[in-house]
Length: 422
Image (cartoon, rainbow, N blue to C red):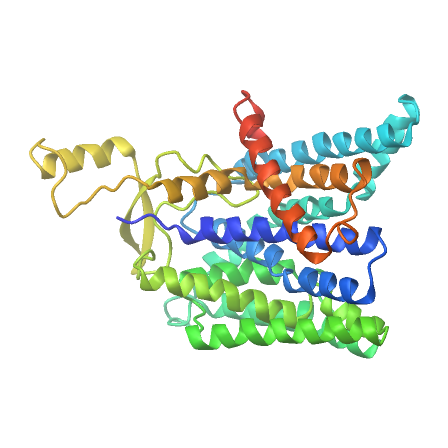
């Protein structure tokens, strides 16, 4: 059995993209670039917005799987708990960083200010993601009712058991992306709305639908989507800056923009189709074998991957976990205790794969740590990339940030208990 690897690839390139996104955006916001430097920086930033939607799609593909055990106790004891720990610890670290740079005294006022930031999402700008993911986790029991829904055998839609999922994806896309995009461009907000005002449930469900093959997009169409979304963002960013158009700026800089949604889905589909072509997907559902945890809660990516087998439930195939001991006994029995048969190859991961899995395991920590490195560059060392070499230096600093953050998180994860947060 092959282990699905493309989730790790998506998380790694998305993590790197986010570091570059923040480096370019905060440099353009915090310094005084020329018009050309500002335009290029914002184009880079907006064209990398696919990173967060891809993370959310990976999480949806994993956590919405009905065959994956997901009790309310597990959601709160594992997922919600970890996000809350990360929020408390890192908003405190960021608050200490800010107070130390300001030269103000630490005391009761500091604690009050930190708690207010924690409550109101008033900490550093990237922390919004943790609040958003926390909301998705809290809605998981309800969201999973959609993916687990099956029409009665005698119903009109008995053979259309995925209809509710497709319906949810279409409704979310219309109300959480299309209508907000129209509002960005026209300045008029539609009176029609859902009682969910962010686009992320759409990405959450879309990731599951694409991964399982319940929604399929041909590779050529996905490539066109990626290209069209990117070109549209480049044009909207350029004209938004040169024409000083708030409508175009909102359109090109929002995760709810149709251009970002089309671009993100197109890129995700390319990874899905490549994995399916390479045989990394089980054909019965398009699901994964031995899937790791969601990006925000990565298990040790170098640990032994859990085994799975295929069974049938109500005439529909399902993925069932097989204990490691049982798999070892079955393998020994099949080979009379002489080792694995030739048709069950075991391949040790190469150096490149180990490196990528190591980065993947540290990716959540990198997201939390890289902004500290960024602030050291910009606020303590006062490095202005635009006067040190321009866009090329900015890209170099972003790459250095990736490496430093990766190294710091890898070392921190060696400390007992730190993996529960990072």
